[in-house]
Length: 121
Length: 110
Image (cartoon, rainbow over all chains, first blue to last red; front, side):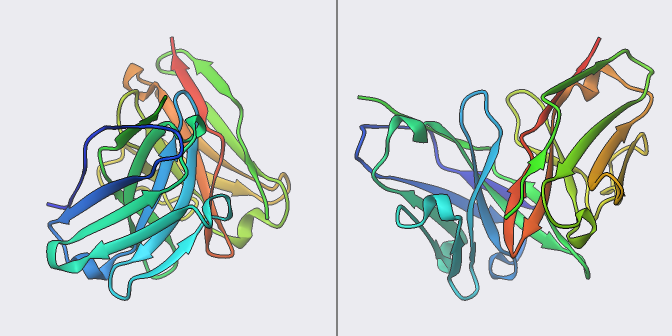
């Protein structure tokens, strides 16, 4: 069965960086895009970008360009999202999600369990 | 760039029908498919509708989706409401390959 298992909760100081992992299993990792979505406490979903594990190609949301880096390690079927220059506004649950496409459209069919990142001095 | 606007909250009684709207700010709602995700408290989102009106396997047929070009909006309708339907619901579409989420609607079943 398809699973996306994320790394655990992190506490970071303002100005630091955080790297969240997302380990895929139950399917061919390189066949599906991985997207990252975050959710601040009590707030809605915010899209951050995607990585295509096959090529390593990425596309970042404008709000995060220059501060986010998405990478992957195909040998262990794991995607990573690193966010730098953290502020308290980056306190959120960070999700990875697999993009599944039919012949005509795409949606997120599997999500990780989320990783809480707390930014506090 | 466009935004997807949802009501902040809706409430209805068990057994009734509720509809949640998702209005696109610019461009045609029909230009890009709309998805709907359900997020129960403390859980990750799950898909309840994709491609405007398609249900993934395992989603009850009480859930249905539609789009209305006249109001430039998509709708999620849940009939025969159950207490387990109480959750946040998010619409989602695409803008030039980028993902756009609505702000979310809190559904209370009381």
